[in-house]
Image (cartoon, rainbow, N blue to C red; front, side, top):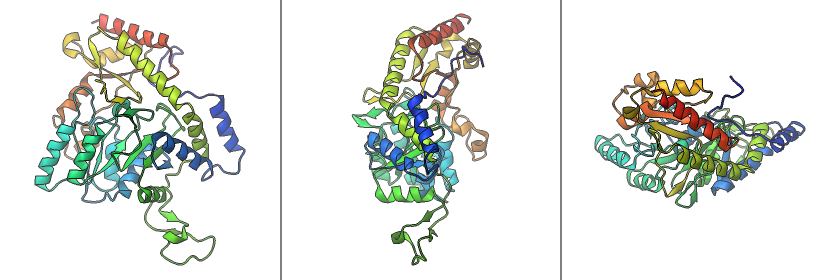
Length: 391
């Protein structure tokens, strides 16, 4: 990779982050120690949720939340086709059937109207979902009050996939506070808003749900006497109450994550500034950004553009390759999940979710991370202008 290559995402680590990890390395606990609850408290407090449960990655949080909500064989989970595969795979890990709700053409978020129409038909067919996973794509919240109202009417549970959205708001509420959901899943991969290396967290206001998710992350084992089936044999005694997983986060990761949380506000502010510069500098080019919902503030994990293909007369692939050749590390988020070969084996076919498919044909992800300066944004603009001028 060239030294001048500008990636689409990059972590921002400072000396305080490094010192926090070194402190844990010098401590008595590398895992299952005090850094975990400190990080959980930092995230849950920021979001305004009662509980945070730190886990190995965002996929683990989705899996455990779905299982803890009772999702199992014969049940159904619905999510957006424009997401990383983990949002859907969580349902299949639990033995459930997965289906998708097409997206809004402007925001590319789960469309409440399409969700309602699908629910009306599913009620007639006896195929209502047990869990719905709205995805806060690129950092912008779905219309959670409307989805929550549908959940109350049709009886499904809600897990917000907020992996892109920490630091954002909707209708004056912090994303992840779970006012309109049972739980919210967060990811701390290095390209996300903050990082713990790998890692994820569930936020929730449900005491029992938080306990069960925490129990599932550690093999389904408890040492709490009040939770045990049998009388304790002694201080060493534990019981496996159900089949769980080893989805624990280490104290090294938690220390990094807690240190990063002290900079979340600054990171989010810089991402918003970069988005505003992009909006201004790309105006007039044959492309369009995602529509911003004025009721919310995006976490701006990603800055997406959609090419006006009819106007430019070439494919997204050609523009993508030209940008990469100019040192701009563009990407594409995401290939619609239902078009993946493994999902086509489940019976999904092209044409089933046409709005998502149209978006995919046009989409390019531009660089967006807090370490970028305005000159970097102008570099992307100039590369776009040149790439489109070749057409």
